[in-house]
Image (tube, rainbow, N blue to C red; front, side, top):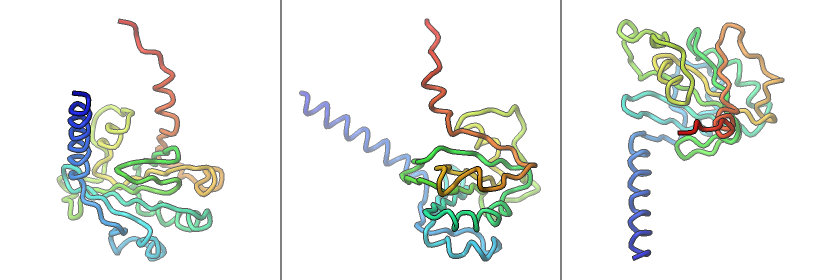
Length: 185
């Protein structure tokens, strides 16, 4: 009986994980547009591109292992960000969709060939909300950056953050949720 329950639980868990991964196409290189700065070209090999989940939104993950490589790419990465779009700070290591990134950048972009008259590069209307899903949904028609901060390769004391850019700090978000007592019922 126990073996059957364990086996059924494992199959259910595998099926759920498989369906989540199936919502994204994964390409083991950076497939960002040729219009991005030529200085970013060498980073294509170490990057990965994810397309999805429901509409073909583009997500480019660029891990870095050397501070000088990151710091030289940072000004070029800022140029691809939509005007007014945020930089979201994440704590290292970041494990999103199977990747384990110690330090780096994730650039989120709207689908290629988006009609900017129908979906302009502006945040969706509504109150500014926090949480992994809602902030990202609000900015889904813009190109925004997630910065995976480790304090060594990606050190916020060594790079400029644009003054006209919203900075959303989620590095300690999970920790705060754990510390917040649940209301008694």
